[in-house]
Image (cartoon, rainbow, N blue to C red; front, side, top):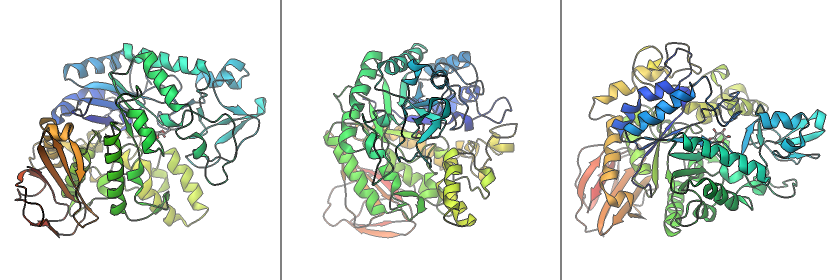
Length: 537
Ligand code: GLC
C-alpha cells in the first residue's frame, strides 16, 4: 500500500507567513495547496503545529489537542483539511509521543506533587550517566521531589512512561481527536524510543541508547496504539532512531499490524566521522551503496516499506551536502532526486528540496536558532576555536533546512512581510519557486516529471529492486522490475565525467528521462558530471 503515493513535508514555521508575524501559518499552507497539487503530491506531513513553548520548534508539545496560535485556529486547520481533500491531498500530523513539553499540564501536575501524573513520566532518585541527544546529561533534578526525570532530548522535553497504561490511553485519545477532524495519516516522532528498560543502569560503553532503542515492548505498544485507534489502513510512518533492519521489518511489515512505513537514518551518516555528527568527513559513497543495498534488499525480503528521503527538517540540504552548490547545482539536485525517489518505498520531499534550496550559510552564532545547534556549539567550543566550531555548525546544523521557503524574489523571498523568525538565505533572488515554475528545465519541473513517471510505471511503484555494479563508488544504479517490465536508473553522484563498460549487458534500453540530453544506452557509457538517466527495457 501507498507505493504510488508521494508525501511532501512542510515545516509550517518556515513555509509561508500571511500575517507579517515572521512565522509561517496555516493560511499560508492553504494558499499553496495548488502549488503542491501541481507538483503531484498526495499527502502533506506537517511538523508539529500544537501549542508549544517552541524550545524545539514544536517538538515540545504542551497540548496535543489544539493548534498553536502562532499557526492559526482549529477552524483554519479544518479549512486546510477540507481544501486539501478537494485537491486529493491528505493531511498527516506529527505525533510527538515519546515526550511532552515540561509545560504540559501533566508534567506540571507531576512536579507539583500529583502522584498520578508523576507516573506519566520517568522519575528516579538516582540518575544514570546517559547523555541527552542534544548534548549534556539526560536527567534533570527536581528539587521539591528530590528526584530526577528522564529527557532523551532537551531538558524541556520530558520522556513519557509508556509502561503506564494511563499514558497509552491518553495518547490514543489524541489520535482519535485528530482522526475525527479528518486527518488522513500520522508521522510518529522517534517512536522506537518509547519502551524504556525496567531497570536503569549506567552505559559503560555509550550514551545510553542501547538500553532504550527498539526497546523490549515497543512492538507491543505500537500494535496496541494502532489497533485501538483503528489507524491500520491509514498512512503512518515511524521515525526510527538508530534502528535495525530486523526491527524495521516488524515496524512496517505487511502483516505485522504496526505502521505502514519507517524512516531510518543510516544512509545519512556516511559523512559523519566515526559515526559522530559533529566531526566532518567526506561522504563515503561506497558505504552509501552498501547501505542502500542492505536496506532495500532487506526490506524487500521482509515485505516491509521504507520512506525514501534525502532530507528533512533535521538534515542539511542534500544539494549542499552531496551535490554542488554552484557549477552543477541543478544537475546534482536532479540526480540526487532521481537516485532517492525511484527506489522501492514511498518518496518524501522536504519543502524547498524541489527547487534545490541550499544550506543556510550562517556566519555568526547569533543567526542560529536550533536548540541542538546551540547546545553543541558550547560543547564544541570547549574543544576547539570559534571558527572551527562555526564551520561544523555551517555543515551540520539543523537550521540549514529550516530557513524560509523561497517563493519569489520579493522581500524575504516572499515568505513574510515582517521580520522572519530565522534569516532567509540570500540566494533567494536566484533560487526561488516562481523562477522555476515556467522553466521547463527547472529542478521543480524535473521533480514534477519524476513524480509522474513514478506514478505511471508499476515497475517504479510495485517493482522489485536490483542494484547494478558499475565499478564506480559514486554511481548508484538499479533496475526496478514488475511483470517483466524493467526500468534502469543510473545516477553519477560526482562532478567528474566517467566512462562505464557494460560489455555483458545486451538489453535494448529506451531512454525515458534524465538531466542532460536523451541518451542511447551503449556498451561504453559516458556519463557527464552528476548525469542521471532512466531507461526502459
Ligand atoms: C525528531 C524530530 C526532531 C526533534 C526530535 C525530538 O527527531 O524530527 O526535530 O527535535 O525528534 O522530538
